[in-house]
Image (cartoon, rainbow, N blue to C red):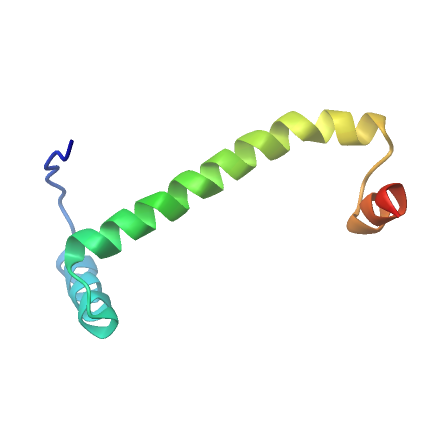
Length: 72
């Protein structure tokens, strides 16, 4: 089900949104939905990373090289 949400933007943000929408040949809603999906993904990644940091430290994994050594 779709719902309508009203947001307030500065005139500069609205102008930028319109420029991007025009350049991408999309409407404002599509641009905002894409931005929100990306933002939600970043938040979820950070949440998972924060859960995993103590486990990685316990396993003495501190870098990408450490991960590579564990999986190789």
